[in-house]
Image (cartoon, rainbow, N blue to C red; front, side, top):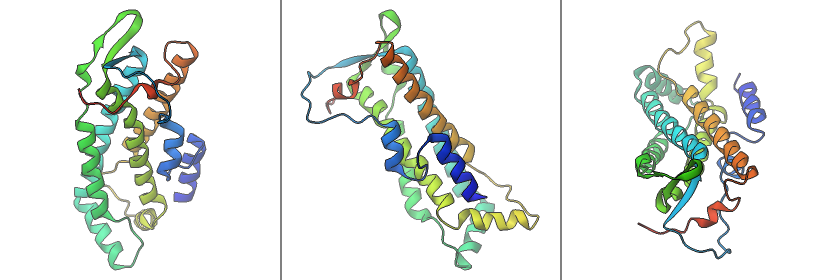
Length: 215
């Protein structure tokens, strides 16, 4: 079951869903530090692109909440404890809890109301906010890959599958749908950026306009 699901995910994104770097290569258009471009206080972004980023940010927060519900779910905890006693190879949940907390803190720094409407279907975004939006793809890529890696590259799914095959399927909290929502949101955002670049409404090299400057 898990192998088939993993192959479907890989085919869906045309990449490796359990590899954070591979996802970054697809969704995170990192800037070239060797290019010297003017520094800006603000940049203008097509409203369609910003709306996709806003939706993606909200999906990311829902993912954090869903993952925390899974970790705190009594049924999930009992099954994980049993799997550990039986010697199953499981995700390192203590490490994952800290990663999840760091991820939430990054997401909470984002304030979507700090932008201003501009002319011709653009919004004006403070440079610090634009940098956060750009890096949202990176953080999401690694969190999505972390979830899929824990599910598919350990015995996690195997043990839960045992209960299902025994007639006692797991009925506790899950986060697979929320993880997929973030992945699909990244795909939609990336495609919208490419669409706006083709229309000439967004600069192809726009990440180079994002110096690390506090405002």
